[in-house]
Length: 262
Image (cartoon, rainbow, N blue to C red; front, side, top):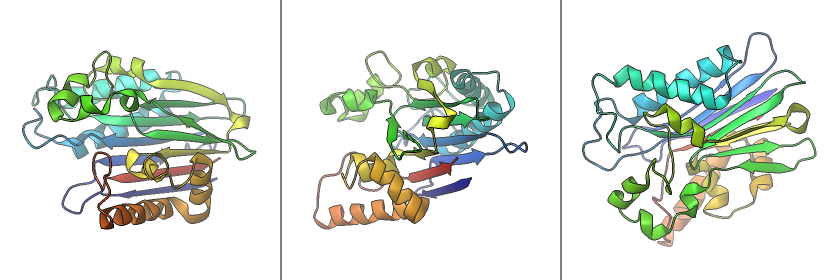
């Protein structure tokens, strides 16, 4: 088994709000991949004294522990319980009803023995890739944010109105019920040779810059490693900056990659 992780902040002036982890059981069978992309709030009050990095670390730690220790729970149930635990950890000090309370996108994958499915869950705009033994790559995406008109997201106020709301998009914040909104399912273990998790700062190699498709992305990862993909993204960002190209959202973003070859 080959496991690689890499993460890079979008700016040295800001903390990295991504959080990634891989957990492998002592039995040698199975594992869990977790990737979170913390949602950077606009400057101003978000109702929380802790901040996004604290939130992603708490939520991520709970996801790793629960996905490994509670195999009886589905991944939606794992996410729901992890959100509940994290909310309880700062419910007495923070306003969890604030629309900008710390929140994150979620990628979660879990696999067991050869007879068990590879389970997956994706919430919001991070990406999960499943590579089959023949090299075919399937992308698991929650595309609700991409389906919204760009004009609807032009200002923070309009984006906030669509956040965790019907007709909008959903992130893991303080409401455990949001887990029901996640894209989730399973694939037979024999049909998966590798699992890849990308926050949107890394997936932009494909979905923003169009440097290749998902199969080429995984091929690049296998050849140059997780940091190699992030380095390629940073090169493309620098080229866009040099030619003053318009880049969606922001030019530089936190970028994280997990590659697990099963």
